[in-house]
Length: 397
Picture (spheres, rainbow, N blue to C red):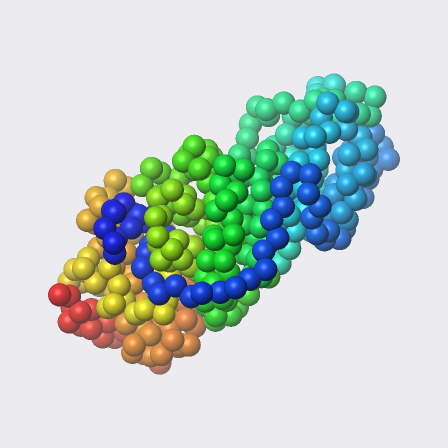
């Protein structure tokens, strides 16, 4: 990913970036902060086990949260901890939580180590759900304290687990921000709703329609901590997989100084949600994963009309090797450009519906490249490679 400041340049993550015509979209936005009511999404939860009082307490609490019962959620919580649990309740309801469950992983009375698993509306809720770890002190059937667990999950800290975010609800998106970025919520929610309208088309092609997209906007400090601090200094956005339960998107708006930049980054990252959300992509498919996200992020422009034209180098193959660790800015730019033009070639040669069916078969159904190519294009992948390498060679300026 590169980070440049020119009018047509922008930072990118192994995700992609900027410059598209911006659609003006008017949408109704609901902003919620700590203490504000949020919409309730009822759902089921775990059945308490009468054999274990702590399990029973936590199972009842999970049921209350899932059905939108704040009083039930707060019932077993000691007074000093109630604001923290109230904030967590508000955050999860704003994110349209559907299922919550606790699993006890260790006990050393009065301390209990637990994993809180969850699913949000619109995504498949698999048996293996995303989860966060907690360490609770339970005395006389009351949760007295919460401490940092000895072992965090791979997702921690999630943006929402502290309960201090402010949320905006757009037509197609839920956007969460720390209080310091509350003023950015209306603007970014409008942009994200516009991007989601584009991405919905590609989610339909992929057979992966989204009920809502979730977007978190981070300060520079939070950018380096959320989801384990995986984001690098040169990144501007990323899609965080939640396994079969879907995906979240995180952006750093301090590095995106124009509306066009915000729009393309969000559209690119939502493109990942649309095309590979809920499945595990293969490292060898990085060219196609990022190429289709670049193609989606640039819409309605085609590759030749974007900044990627300047970075395209003469290709030797269609399925480019994945980026190496420590790749230079020039290598990253060339990789993204080639991926973008590779997908653009498939669209030019075979039409968008067939190109996107190839993407679906390869990325979501894990077809071999040759099998996907023969199924969709009626020819082997070697022939498609020859066609597109020749086409891309003629696009090099």
